[in-house]
Length: 620
Image (cartoon, rainbow, N blue to C red; front, side):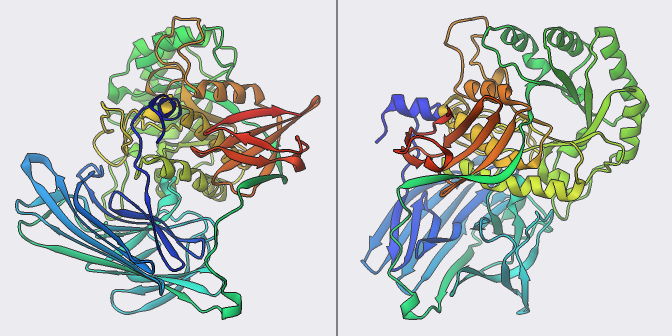
């Protein structure tokens, strides 16, 4: 058990996640956590990332049901699990769930769930979600059986699909490793798949209840809802090619020089009107990162007005780098009127940014399949009005929200100087493993952007663990207890070493996208590098993320070279080459010490032991 002080240093909270229980049935292994299954492997290879029974509220928040009567039985050749769970909804409504799980040595896994409400229960989704991994699986052949019995031989998307690649699903079969196929059969309702890489989740998600149906919807009182997932592994390898179950990977992670090279991006910091005065004080600290760009956020629909630009002008006056203004355009009056009003406020305050990024305010909200697109002027008209109001300033477009929205509403980029969007790792899940696993999806996101927009200058962020705006509901989730919850406006791990490791891993994951600018934080507030004691010049007040962002800002414009890790889910790295030598950034993405062999990079022959969530720069 981790002590409270160490837990706080690592996670920003002493609240510990419960360790999952490992269950085995022959070559099949699963991790049981919170009544759900994750890391489902066969012969040491991940075949499914998760099978979960989930209930969502009207804002797509996920209920954390209270489990009871949990029983786990292990027989030596298999296992069974059963439990009850209860979700408490608004107005005293209650949803009760009974579940059972069975794994057998012949490679079969069955998960049954039944929901029943005595009161009736409002939900956006109630039932199973199945996650397929993406690494080694994206772009590979699958067989999809539909509810009408039709069978489709196709492939999982390689580039990220903006909509559902498969609908009306009854089963899907993929190849896990040569000679081993895996069928996942879904019964009790109609399922469909979405490409969760849109949201930076490292999975394809097959879920119950098609999004084309109305939501939220009502589960009627005393009307049971029963579903079942059956996973069947078909191992057709000859006995000579079918060794005993794998024992796991080597304990030493080896780093080798990769082929890809490029230039480190400029580093930005987010500035908001709400944090402007605190950010001004923080920017004057002796240890403030010397970033290349300040990204000023302006949203008239949030009450921002002329006063914001007076604060912005003070900040810009002491910043030696570039400045960018992002505008959430209300589109409630004639566009020229709205843009010229903002331009007038800027001139009156003496605020003259080097670049402006505009996005209609309504485009920050998601438009799921089957939903009506909100009223919005043509983007060509929005960009034309911005060009007229801000002549001579670089103009960018894209989305103030996430890649999902950009992928579904692809902006006309012909007259734009750059494309921009954000990511967020706690849209669907907020446990530690899921957050770190989102790093796997980032290369797919950046490669998909490049496939759409070619070599157009590309800016990414602000991308933080806390969510600054919820495109999928009416609000971000309050988090007064500092828990790990999806879609929260603040997250405890932002205060810990976890966030520093996540940011360093984020950089390693997106380097080959040739980004112009990368923004990973603000100076103050819930996304900030400082804790709030902004006037202090003492060592206190800095979050661990501060050292990473400051170090990255010092690397902007320098040459990088890729580093290949034998286990990138645990350790990632990249090299920086300068005229005076090389440095290597190495990051441990786990809460355990990791032994690293970097001799092929020219480092000490005995290797190095990385502390939990350590992000370190080593010169050699």
